[in-house]
Length: 125
Image (cartoon, rainbow, N blue to C red; front, side, top):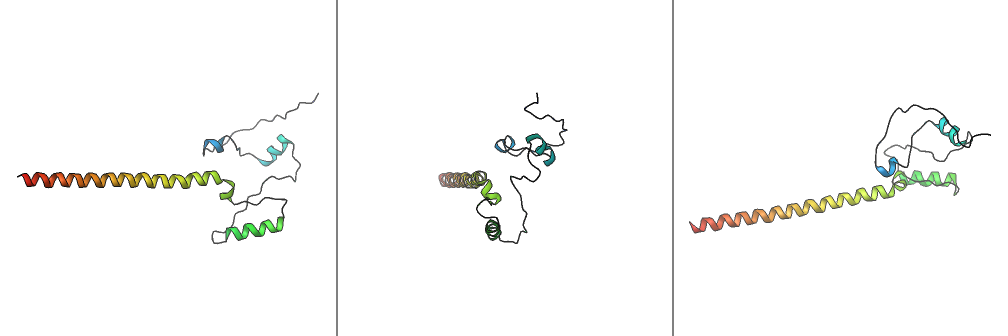
């Protein structure tokens, strides 16, 4: 009787730690090993990453690739793929800005209070 699972011994060569949600979701491995383990055909791909030049218009390139591939494929930028992560990072920037603004306002009130106390002390003398 043939086993329902494939087994293969591999050596771990590195670990990437980004964020718990990503760490538990993705694994980087050799493509040939992955194909063997999940029994994928040789010309089967689920994702292709494309690097473009920094000066290129990202959305124009995305639109052009989408037109060439048709509706059968989904073409997303890295921002669209990780929408929740970039939204949280943007929100984090605004929260830090608000907290620092509150600290500056409190410091300003503290300085005004200290100067007022100093003036009142000098008037008594």
